[in-house]
Image: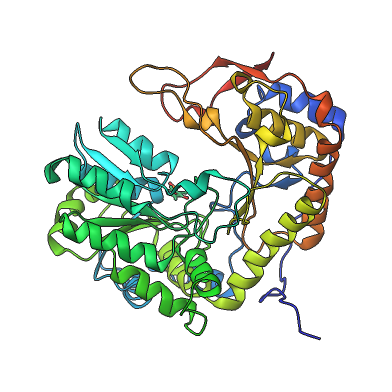
Length: 458
Ligand SMILES: *Cc1c(COP(=O)(O)O)cnc(C)c1O
């Protein structure tokens, strides 16, 4: 018998989580204006809102925290992190920031200006926010396969090179400050980008002389998928694949709260000294001095260790295997989920789950609320609310996909929790025909509205 995968860790410390009743949850979600971000975490039994900053650090990471150097300048923790970034990712220059969006803010302050176009693959919401805030436009060049939720296609995060070249050829180089490649592609369902595609995008970037920046939050999961799915990579280690991926990038922004398994932190890494110097000015203004940016010494130490652990095959196999374990149960029950399963999350196709609901009533949000009421499980809407309004017309943007994302925190829950989540969602699925009304918006912010939007039942 072939031995199955098993977690590459055992548990040394636990945290109690509390169940609640359906009646309690009906009150609590109403009080939260039907926005799951407004719920207090103790009112959630299993929290799948995000895999960002919610992972469990290892004993080695906690030990590294104790040896953190809190010197303002030249801290050893800075050099630990610098070495880890050089060894694992291959970059000579880096700037610590407090999280991924801060890295975007600093780098885009140098590179992106009014009227620019930034092509990429389904830009993440904060990335798009930072582009649009500068009155530039994010141009989505994701491959068409990504929009067919049932299609088994290995690399749905890929950029369509034809779409990309159309943009590059149509506009002058001065208008395109960078191409952003998101690995894995969060907004299209945690889907990976193949090495082949990375090479093609890099060749186009070189042809048109435009910097290629990787939005790297889940770079290690991307490398794992390349190893498992792409011809020629089965015998390479995840770390070797990671190094190869970054030979094609001019720079990267990183949310360390994902694949680096820390609770807070981010960075920019660059090949160009000149760009590093320009970005340094903004890093000092917005984040902090060059050798700590937005991070304390102990956090930089834990991050250095996390980059190493997060790029180990055994860890990635059990992490991504657990996501698939949940996905398989849902598929077997007939629940429509995005295929193939994402690296960090299962995405439920809400339009297929609730076909009787009009798109104006926020289909995926309605499903997220129902799942919470059913089992105290908190997922998140990746749909019309997240897609926000068109900055010019102020009309709702209706994305092709309305998804409920169930993001699995790293090294936090057991497969019993996965069973519980599956049962909760299957219960909602069985009463889906009774769900005929959604929500309308009571109030919303002008940008990134999903965090604070207030809703009421139609
Ligand atoms: C999380 C994330 C970001 C933003 O990072 P934060 O740490 O949340 O600020 C940017 N891009 C992608 C792809 C992400 O997943």
